[in-house]
Length: 69
Image 1 (cartoon, rainbow, N blue to C red):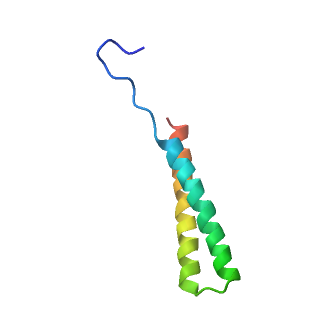
Image 2: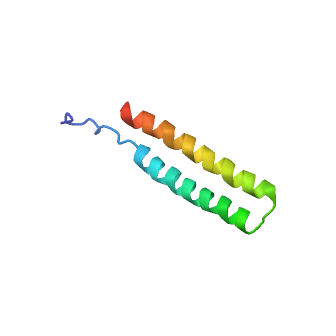
C-alpha cells in the first residue's frame, strides 16, 4: 500500500502495445496475402511483409520485457 501523499506505482503499457502489435501483424499479414492474390506490384507486397516482420519483432521484445517485469 502506498504511503499517504505518494502516487501509486505506474502501470505498464506493455499489454496495450502487445495488442496493437498483434493487430498490426494480422492486418499486414492479410494485406500481404491479398496483395499477392490480387497481383499488386511487388514493392507493396514487400512493404506489407516488412511491416509484419517488424510486428513480430515487437511482439518478441514485448514478451521478453513482460517476463522480466
